[in-house]
Length: 95
Image 1 (cartoon, one colour):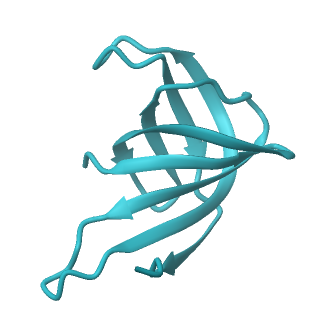
Image 2: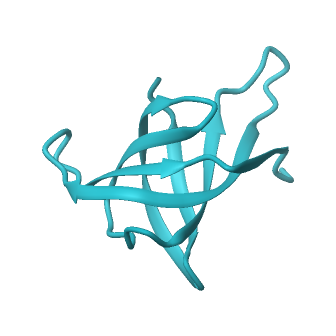
């Protein structure tokens, strides 16, 4: 499932890494990113879900830990990232 993803926080610092999911499960996510994150660090990321039939956007705000990072080969992106999905909540952005 390819959905936009943005890393909000990596460890203790804010981040502005964006990318696209490749695989999502109840325990984790694999995504392609345009910037680096630190392996083993806590991570906060948002996955932008597609608008529903009323046109409302919904984001999935996730907390986890970076399990693995490697140089990317797909889509010309910089890194492939595997992270856990330990906690999440649905968020509707203010428009």
